[in-house]
Image (cartoon, rainbow, N blue to C red; front, side, top):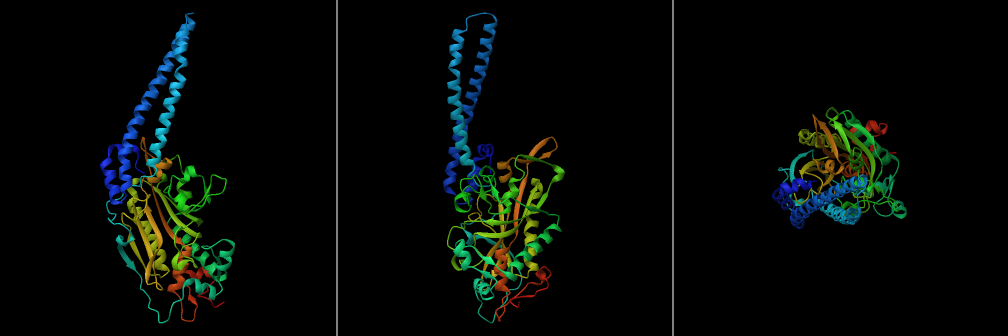
Length: 425
């Protein structure tokens, strides 16, 4: 996030960035913030001066006592200080909280290469990969395929948990695990450390890694506890090093998070209401990196390449999209999506999100590294490696056969006990 110092020194640049995002309301906040910051610093100085005077007066009373002199007037004067200090301290604290409330809602500063646009229609396709298969039969929705092959159950899940949940059974459950194992093996060979993470985080830390609006629209809160279920292992990994200083030789630190993810997914589910694409609980392998600022943009490109390698080996047609200013969200300075072609809808759908968050999370969480005699904030980056539910949908549709069965991608066969087709057993 932009610090108050950065905003104070670069108000026009912050406003220009917000204009790119078409966030006109927050442009007005900048002048308010600068005014409140000026008032805060003036009051803070007064508070410090008042405390200093109180200390001097306390010392004077002590000296008068030693000299057996009258201290009544000084004591009377001193008795007025606590109330004055408390009143000033209260105003300072209130202003600090007001400023922080604004700051926590100011989005990251965008990279110059982010395309200008209003919404997802203005995202820019960077490249496409894979051949789109033509089918000589009518494709079934993936939910119907699952039910017809008896490898999942949506009705029971809806009954016991509500819409947006599912049971995976038999070979489909095995394929879900195969996707995880395949992605984990690929990443660990590239030097990622596997991380199994806490599935609940306190708000104090959670607000350091996400848009504050997510607490209402995305996250599930544990009743009567200061705990939220994680929406992605990115969040658990990001907070792991709060208030920490890395040694320079520890960076980059590459972690592969494995976890269930929990999301409210507020909004219409459309054709996927009975399926695996937009759900409240799913499993994901996440790439997360702490690094030095000068390395983050090359690492950003490598993260999306890792995800591309996974979907290329699955032989699923995809494209990589550069997300525009009006669609990028709060935390990222730049974001790529990898979208897989879904043949039944004849459309590309997002399955991977890759972001460079630059200083945004590390400033909130106070994560630095030792650079010579100085300490600097690290950069944090994240990218989906694979969200298994979305990958399963892509496989169930792209690899669907005329006989109703589904060909298993060759790269997954070793993880599925040699099985080559879903539905034969």
